[in-house]
Length: 134
Image (cartoon, rainbow, N blue to C red):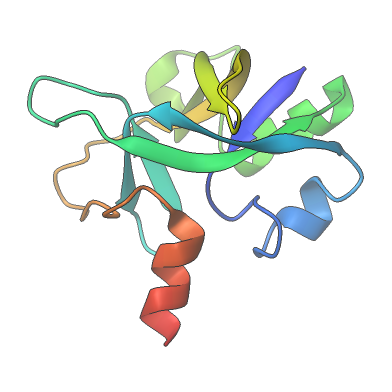
């Protein structure tokens, strides 16, 4: 299964080594939506009438079922409970890989209100964090 990650699970970020270091890197890509700065991590939100379409920059990995379950735990996704009990929800999205190929991948979406959090301009969490540190 393909998973699209955009924040702390990307290479060089805090959760990469623990969760994805042994998974096969497929490539970089983008999808539609916006990133929020939740604090120490981002949250992705889909395009809505009140939020214009943006681009989320991330990475694709091929993961096995065990890794996917571990990622679900990290993201607070509880697939067997009502959706409102999950911090993030996992949904399929179209991802455009560098080079233009479009693939279907799973992705975690923020499952709380977005009103109290600033948008990560440019949709690239790694660049945003590096800019804040410099």
